[in-house]
Image 1 (cartoon, rainbow, N blue to C red):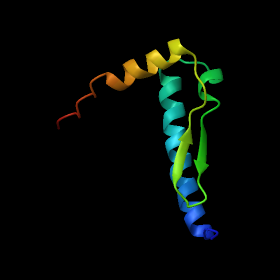
Image 2: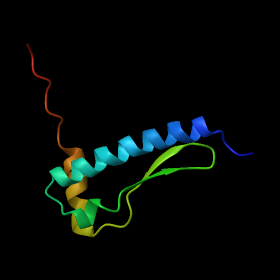
Image 3: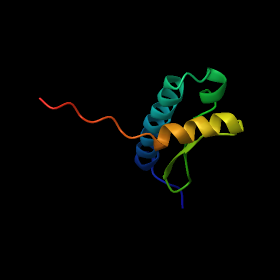
Length: 78
């Protein structure tokens, strides 16, 4: 059964926002566009949003893992 357009649009919007967040994070690590340029939003036939990261070199994957394990910065207290 085909999905309705609104389901697709909602999935695409979520996948696009998540893809952009990943691209910004990878660029923030100082990684070149050749690493984060292949990050793509994807939507399944059921409307589920995904982010395709593609293949990355092992050293890049280690830097990504280190960044994900770093403690979050505390929120400023006013």
